[in-house]
Figure 1 (cartoon, rainbow, N blue to C red):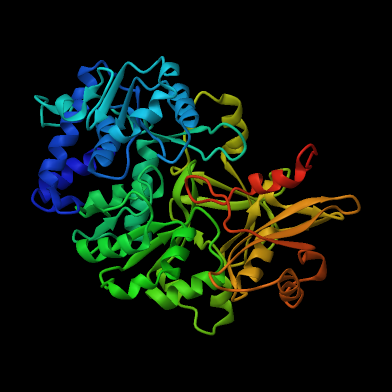
Figure 2: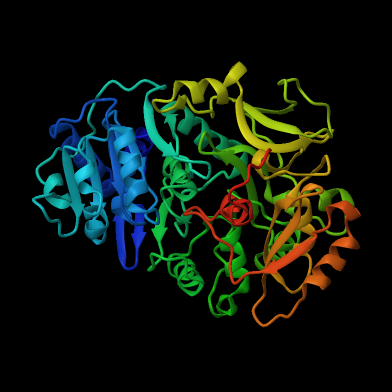
Length: 519
């Protein structure tokens, strides 16, 4: 069994049902299967061999999904790259992966021109649209190729998706996701997280190179459609319009995107009644924001905790547990990432990798068929991250007595002030409850006496006024005194990476320049 067979089976069972939807374009499963097969044969005819890699630099759209699936059908691995990255970051991923082919959109021609001479291992450049420099045209490559599936030998532990981490601590590492990993993930969704139905429509409002693209597999498995908004940027009115147009049922969003939808007055202009599921993950979702989201859109939210190294579904907080009312236990659980999913074991360990008792902080680790094969060409990093057979996530948290996982912070984000460990997320949760606050990031800044102290970087809501003193007093009412910010700075926005995560390292670097931070 391999991931590409999901599409073959869907085309066999529901050939006329929509597979891809874009503006006024509808591609049924029969045609989607034929086009993916033709691209897979084309890659093989260009010299691709099982185990080779194919890089893609494409915006959200049908050709992006074809490019994700075709290498997998040909026994190759796909290397999806977020379009918002810098050319040098793309060049690093292409070269590090050793991709023999790069499929790109014509809008990235000048972007690639900046680094093209460094891409010496790429044998074929394939352009969706009008290519240059003698590159192959995407549609021409498909012409004349067989519409039946290729038949290479594909083993469950063969590479399917080479997922490059966000690289917040240096060059990104390529997490090798196998067919076994992706099939396990799809089974997790279908079994407990989101039993997708044939009439569902997954709207790709987030990049298909990340969580939204990973979500396609369990939808394809049941013959559900993927749809695309008429925008490349995340624009709330266009997202709402696409939900209405395509009768979208499902979205994958990072918390920042949910907050932007909540802040948009345009949501009342559109019929959003088709929505029944919004998956969220990838960054902290603060309880106050989550309560507002449930009040606005209804109990349709599902929280997921995973990583590129274990995609999407290590733990899950399902829809029914987002309905808390005034129950203090249920309200507390909204701050959790839920409980482990059936095919995954999750535990918390101390610095010696000994399992921590319930309620005790430690590093979150996971194991199971969801966990990556390893890092591409990085045996030492693989051995360290997968030591003892457990994926060491780098996240700090604890499990309660009922198995709910509470993620407090990344290891590197913990603040040590006067010998006390301070977890920024706890402070951020409190500050987010202030009505004038839209976003916040809490970091440690150098201090001669305490080593480091707490600083809050706040983005105020549009039109709201709030002072440093008000934020500090608000924290004093809800936190131990040693945890409150010693200073507050107001920013127009917080820096984020291409996946919507706040770049705390970039914020810290403004204050730690020339100093060594020991965490």
